[in-house]
Every structure is written in structure tokens, then in C-alpha cells.
Amino acid sequence: MERVIQADAEKTAGDQELLGRCRAGDETAFDDLVRRHQQRAFNVAFQILRDREDAAEVAQDAFVRIYRSVSDFRGECEFTTWLHQIVLNLARNKHRWWKRRGRQSSVSLDTPVEMADGEAPMQMAASGDAPDMQTVKAEFVERLSRKMEELPRKFREVLVLRNVEGLSYEQIALVLDCSLGTVKSRIARAREALRENMQDET
Amino acid sequence: MKDCDVIQPELSAYVDGELTPPQRELIEAHLASCPRCQQVLAQLKTMAAGVAALPKLQPAPQFLAQVRGKISRGDDPEALTWFDHLFRPFLLKVPMEVAALVAIALLVIQFRQPPPAETVGSDQVAQEENSGNQQSLPMETRTEADHSAPSESASVSPLLPPTAAPESEVAAAPTGESMPSPEAQPTTENAAGSSENVASESVSGNGQSVGQQAKSATAVGGRNIKFTSGTKRKVAASNAGTNRPAITPTPSAAEVSLLARNAGIDPSKVGGVVVVQSRNPHDVQGRAEELAARCNGKVVSVSPSMESTGQIFFVEVPREYAASFKLDLQQNAVPSALSTNRMVAAVAAITTNAGLLSATSTARVIGVLTGGVNTNAVFNGPAQLSLANNPQARAVATTVLEIFVVPPPSLTLTNPTPTATTATPAH
Image (cartoon, rainbow over all chains, first blue to last red):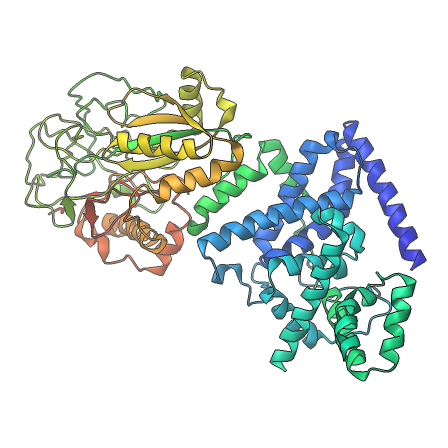
């Protein structure tokens, strides 16, 4: 656990340094920042939207926005918190829009990831994300992935931030701009809903 | 049991290590003696592990390049979202050239009556015959087809489609005389007041007779509309009786910029163009004003009426409302707005016909969809409907349409299309 915290600290320091260079007009620093966090942004967006194209667009737009406002970012929070906020906001807009338009099928919520475009294949999460957690079978994960899609977006958000991104409750509260209590109860309800959904099927 | 009700809501936080030591001890003490809660805990842990094990996707290798592209193009995430949203039904990606989304140029196309009759010529270059020489279009970048658009004539934009065979290049010969045959309009119901501003144009050629059958549809072109000028074709415009619908392209971004500047609006603030077809621009202006007022915006400038392109309103709305403003305006423009599918099918029909018609020589294509953005077109031939469901054509078509088009409600088309079509059977 301590090792993880230390790694996080190093990462944060690296982000701050890159941000500093960005502000000073170093374009390569921005590129580094994108490379460093593109997968994170893309994955979070994908877990919320469940559509590769939308996710890629949201993630790219998030970096465009960061590029534009990097001089305004004074480091009041970690860079990743800021990134998460932007990605989530853009994803919500997109999600909301499609909801209003009644799109269902094309969001492909029911299909896992399509590889038709020949893009990089799906990769399983590296083990060791959660040392104290039991390993789960691929089949189970696939089923859970479908069940996640049935959850309300708010529930998906907290679960992704917590378990995919590994954020603490406090960090999640910062990203979502809500209280610690809200985060705690929302995660509890989200997991409970997921647990029930999974039981329904079995 | 009562303990379980208290304990269980805390179990998730327990799993995440987010409880204080005293809380944790409390939980553990209960767990030691409660198999039920132990089971719930195990399940919650499994859920957490399952979410953590969700597949991780790699962004495409060109991710950074795409971010860079958006930055250098000045794309605005919000604006992009709007364009993407607006055109998503057509599977389109429209590049956004403007950064800020503050003012919206609203182009109102006044619908004109479909032509009573016309013929299409082939393979001969038509001379231009302008009935009037008022070239008063503010949109200076119009093409040869447009520049001859006096108040009573239509602008036809001949386009050469990649799909159209060479012989489909059309010569539009001036007929001069008008041969209206109102009864011969099988596919068009002409409820529109036929009176004013009816654009006229006749093309003839190959000894084809004028005025047997005419189909018409509304026309709107994409923002980036370009007219093929390689084929030296000119469109004859005759005034008076033989009228056909104006084929009115949407102004390009550059043109909108120019208009904006003329109206004293910073062109960089212009975030998009909404095309609305209506027989009555005042209706549209009224609706625009109403909508704008609802979101603290206002109509800031109304161009003088332009005979062939309609009026352009510049509307200022707060950025965050821009997207909904545009959507509202378009969706509510016409109660009987076409469904996406119908529109796509309609476009498909046109695309199909381009090839078909030129191949069979039953008629000539005057203009077709080209290059992925242009939609100004005139088609001729009775086969228009038959291939509407051709999947291949549909596939092509869905990459072509750029501007959302709403035909006026009174225009009942068997084959509504977002492009201009005028069909004439060739003999």
C-alpha cells in the first residue's frame, strides 16, 4: 500500500512538472502529458459511455480543453483530478444528449467491445490493482461488464473512479464536487445494485 | 439481525478501507459472528474486484495526433459536440472551423414553388441567359450557377459526381420560353404558394420536350458546397412562368464570416449555421427570437431579403445554450420533419440515380452529390424511387449529407430529399 502511495506521489510530481513546462510554452511537455494519461482518459470515458468512438472523442476533447486552460490551472488539485472532472463532464454531456435523442442501439451498451475497426484489442487489467482482492474469472468480468451498463450513470462513475482508477473517497469527492458522505453512500448503493443485478442472473 | 442492517451499508466502505479504526473494529466484531454479513462482504469484494478487472482499452495510436489536430484547427470541444450531435444520425463528422460558439448565423431558405416543367439537355453546353443581371448576392463566392440568380431565376449548381458517368454532364440550354405544365407533377404536391420568388430555370437539350413531368424537392447544400466548374456548363435561367424551386446552397463558413463582418459581428464568434427551410422567413425569425429570448439571447441582425438565398439572421445566444437552440430550431422548424431514415433513404436514392441515370441515358444528371459534403443536385428521371433502398447507395449517401434539411410541410414528396432534385423524363 505504501509503495502505491509513493508511486502516486511520484506521478503527481511528474504531472506538476509537465504542467509547469506546459505553462512555460513547452509543447513537448503537453505531448508527454497526453501520452501519459491518454489511456486513463479514454478508459474512463469508455466505461461511462460504452462506445469507443464517443470515448475517444471525449478523451481527446478533454485534452484540448486542458491545453487551452493549462495556464489557468494553478494546481489546487492533482492533475488527474482535473482530468477526471473534465472527462466526466464531457461524457455526461454526450450521454445526456444521446439519452434525449433516445439512442439505444448505437450506444452498443449491450455489446462489449467491438473490434471491427481493427483497433487495439482489449486488454485485461493488469493484476495487482487490488492486492487484497480475489482474482476474478474472465467470464465473470464479462458478465459484470454487461451488468455495469445497466447501472445508472452516477453509479458507474463512482465505481469506475474507485475500482478502475483507484481513487480514494476523498479524491472522488473532489472530482464529483460532492461530500465524502455522498461518495460513501453512492459507492455502497452502486455496489449493492451491482451485486443484486449479478445475483438476479444466476 | 438489527446489527446486520446497520453493518451492511458500511461494508462497502470497509472493503475500500475507508473506515476509521473504531468503525472497522465494530464491523469485524460483528462479522466474526455473522455468516450472512460475511457472505455479503465476500460478494461486495467480488464486485469491487470485478470492476477493477474490467477490460482496459488502448486508445488508437493516432490519439495524440488527433488531439493535436483538434488544437491546431481550433476545434472547440463544445462546438464539436454540437456538430457531432447534430449530424450524428447521418454518421457524419463535420470539421469545425470556428472556435467560439457564440453567434449563430441562421440562414432561412425561402422555399419556392417547384417548377411546372422543364427538360434537361445533354452534352451540350448551355449558354447562360440571364433574364436579369442583378447579381446582388451578398454571397460572393457563388458559382457560375449562382451568379446568374436574379430574383426570378433559380440557381442551379451543376455538380459532377464521382459516380456520374461523363455523359451525365449536363448541358443546360436556355429555353427562353416557358412551358408550364402544372398537371404533370406526379411526385410533388405543390401546396406552397406558387407566387412570389419562384425561381425559374429551364434546361433543355437533345430535342427533349419541355414540361412533361417534373419532380422537385427542396434543396440545401452543405456548408462547404462547391460547384464543379470543370465542365463549363451554364445554366439558363429564364424568368417568368417556368418556375422551379430555387436550389439554394448553404453559405460556406467564409461567406458567413463575410456576412457577419458586414453586420458588425466578429466572425470568430460565429459558431455554426443552421439551415431552415420555410415558406415564411418571418415565421422562422419569430421562432428564432422566441427561442433566443428563452435562453437570454437575441436576434442581432437580419440581412435584407436575398432573393435566391433567403434571409440570414444572426442570433446571439449564450454558449451553453447554443446547441439546444440549434436543435430546437431545426427540429421544430417543421412539424412533419422527416425521420432520419427517410432522409437517408432519400439521399441514397439520389446517389443511386446519379449512376443509374447517366448509365441508362434516360435522363441527365445536372448536379449530384459530390465529395462528401456537397448536396446540391438536380436529378432527372423517373427512377428516383426505385433504388431508395439500395444498401450500397445508402452507404455512400450517408457519408455525403452534411446539412440537416427540413422540407416545408406543404411539400409532400414521394421522395423527399435534402438535395435539390428536379426530374424530367427524357425521351
